[in-house]
Amino acid sequence: MHFLSSEQVRAIADQPTPHKVAASEVVWSGRIVDMVEDRVVVVEGEEPVVRQYTRHPGAVAVVVIRGEAGAEEILLERQYRHPVRASLWEIPAGLLDIPGEDPLVAAERELAEEADLSAGRWDTLVDFYTSPGGSTEPIRVFLARDLAPTGTTFEREDEEATMEYAWVSLTDAMEWVLAGRLHNPSTVIGIMAAHAARGRGWKGLREPGAPWLR
Image (cartoon, rainbow, N blue to C red; front, top):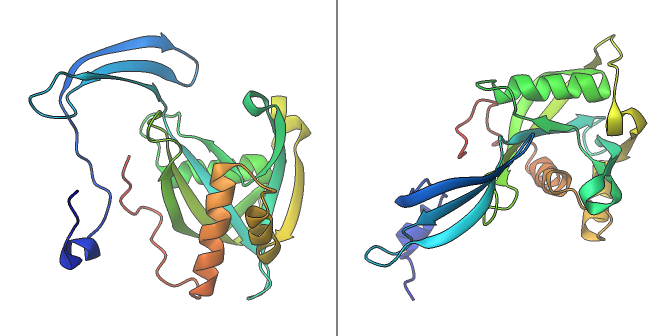
């Protein structure tokens, strides 16, 4: 095993490291995702290995905050998710399925369409891959504050037509994460990141257009 030096440890950060792909095939193509099979050279000089994964356009999510300092509330939405046969409490989110669209613009649209709200202040809260061993899907979670109603009620369809909404204490939401009551990854990660950021007085947050590994 190879361990990093103390200086190398201080520089730890994920970074792109593309490997040679000897062959690639789209096994199946769907409305949102494709199934891809690559033969990739993982170790130089050895035979390529087969790796299958879903190719996904990515998504944005929003931790929506209101309330006085120390008593902040976040917005949660209850939505049915058919693959897991469960209704999950989630933060607002949406796909990056418009080529070239700015992620912040997508987040602003989702906040308006799902909650009839706009925000005067936006920050990047946290970035992650949903399942990097099996999917390309990247998600950026924004923090939205200084809220105002849009004045327009968006017409919601399919699962969104039956959504329920709740403003909940950020402190309570963190407790629910640790108790196993919430399961949506953007929601779990967003709540934990927001709780940690509040503990730092909201200092050190990245601007909305910060670099994103995707």
